Image (cartoon, rainbow, N blue to C red; front, side):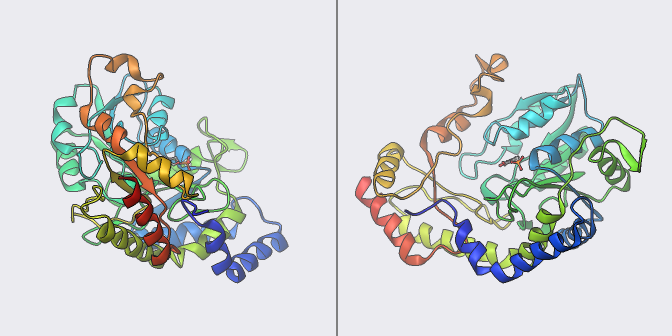
Length: 362
Ligand SMILES: Cc1ncc(COP(=O)(O)O)c(C=O)c1O
């Protein structure tokens, strides 16, 4: 069986470091908002080049809390991509705002900046670009549009920890960057976890309150907040893995480039637009023979997955507004995309096996 991601292999490679980090937490019996959370936030902020990194319970919460801290609420519209995981839009809905879906670029699968301006209305308050599959969205163009129209930018970095655009890390460009540490992410913990990065002192203060019952001082509650904290065990694990993230991402890129060399002319390999460095959270191809490839790979015990089969504007929960308004690129990509196994430990011989199966299927 070839998995989509080899969490066991990664754990075994780091076993000594991770086991001793976990043992230290158990020994300390400090489980919530203790020294590891503090240290991880400091180390992540330093790595990402931001003033503040405020951890929370998940990537979904990171988006939700960032929107609340940015003051977005009922009556507001937030522009985002329909070709993403549901959490990006859900968070907009949680705060009572409305997600406005704008179609994607056919090659990078990221939001198409050329289509953003026509979607802006007097109610638009923010844009949430998603750095999908690990490739940074076109932040130069998005930032310029946001400036022209006085909009906030909140980055969804759930799939792109460690990606950068000309030396600036994703998550350090907009007002806030929202990260997920779901186990299969490029930087993943052993449960749920999330982080909001920001260089605004005001946003950081609000985030710290919101994630902890609206409180900065124990038993003093200034706003209605949430129980959304990263726990010490996860923070301890993330501190170990953060030390290896560049090596993980370099190895993901190596694996992706090997695939792309071998798959060229057989399917459409992922396109790197060269504006930022792609950290390949997913390696996603396009092919007219997508379903046949999937069937063959599955039959040969090679994992593969469709991210995403139904764009968000076609989901039952959001489709009403878009019934007569197709977003053709997202719909076309959803019909042809297939993600293949990619992870830092993936060996060339395994990639060759996957490619041989794809060749046999097309
Ligand atoms: C693009 C995107 N946004 C948000 C999330 C939500 O993160 P989490 O699962 O940590 O809540 C995910 C991942 O699951 C994601 O892929």
